[in-house]
Image (cartoon, rainbow, N blue to C red; front, side, top):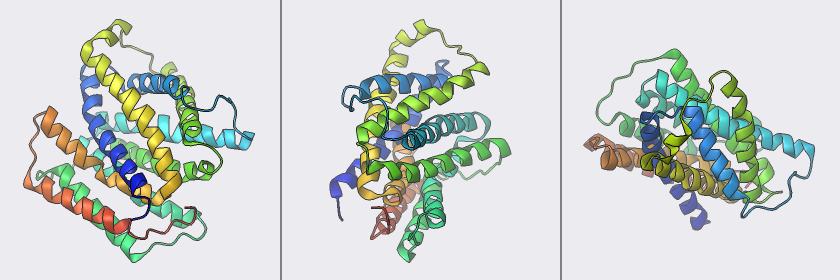
Length: 295
């Protein structure tokens, strides 16, 4: 496999993002709201990224600056607010399954909008196998599908926003460093979420942030899941292309289920093990000679 180091970087990123479900759940249980968690983790990550990013403030053109605004909106505010709100309205299993359709949506959008992009048999087969494995892992042997139109629509909006994010970020990755792109995403993520507090004001007491459980879970989400992982994701997309990198999102529920079993005492069934194996096989097949004209 070409660029094995960058593939491992994408896998590591997704593995960490899979664990963040547990961190977020703990913070929600302690009284933080989804928008509050998102704003705090992005502010800390934004301050951290300045230590390694270029010191210039603006991009090369106002058009590129607008592109970064879109990236912050899609990969930050829309994705996180839609996903976390959906969890409050619909079943977690439903939301997790729908969000994991992001790679499939990325592939479909690329076929529609990216010149020269065509789906291969291996890409379609691998995606189908991975998606089936996602379903097996998420439902973990207890398949109960109950629809909530608004919640499931928000989950689909989150998946669609990440699919667009993955394609758009590739357009600027050739002209800017991963650190600069990531810094811009954090900044515009913060900018675009602030107006939402006009409709739902901040409620969590600031002294509550000093609670060890709250502090360390936020620290992990900020420094590792946001600062490092968004940086790594930008690097992976730049080197591997949007399609190949997005396919690793299918691995997200594997680490989520493992983390839930370790830290939340939730059972890991044979169905989950079988689904994990199917996901791994599907991702391998889908990424075998995956076409990406921009790579």
